[in-house]
Image (cartoon, rainbow, N blue to C red; front, side, top):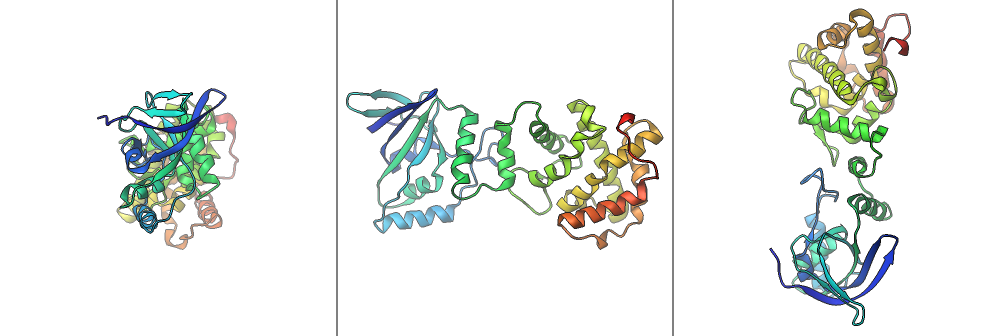
Length: 328
């Protein structure tokens, strides 16, 4: 759906491969053209923090008291958003198409201005020809200097900037795979954008996975093989929990998850040594001695507590010989 085009005075500049425009636009008209893309709404394309309506309401009240909003909105023009720019009159015309401007920074100011009874002109800084990776990077840069981006959201956003096949890229893909694989015990138990009780965030996941990715057996395996082994391992852990507690909720407890992954390499070593495979049933037999541990004695959530629980489990399943990468 398109509305009438909007024309306003603007200064045009350029830097490297993209252009930008600086000017003032009627807030209520501008709102109809913009899109605030949020990770929770569209994990593949979104990158904004969750919109805070209470914050926007306070901004609206501020405007209605006759005050102005300093600081320009940072927008990214999507394909076809810029209809024309007249260098003689210094006027920029936007095509009037909905969702043709993506908000990189200033979502609350824009929404607050939209809710306000009073109308006003908002300062804008509009990028043209940015890639999605560049949009994400600007969002991170701007917010690192203002209100911080939650760490778990920052990790989710690295999917747009991580080098293909890099460690960061693999961790992000593993996170998605274990969340989306219907056979995975973590399916539906992951949270991409914020910390939530009973769900594994990017932060907890990467704390648990980062080290083991660099060790056998995962280090030398294909991505699909990594997923398969991790699913089998977690299925075995799930069976332990069902046997011990008659439910599996603990598997998505961040501290427990990090503790159980702390012993992953040792369990893999013992499993391969005894069974020459990484099947769920094989993992389960190696893990079975941890059934005798009183889990309630290990309720801490800091690194020390996670390590203590992991060391206790390791002491039950590890025999005297040491782990050797040569076996994998």
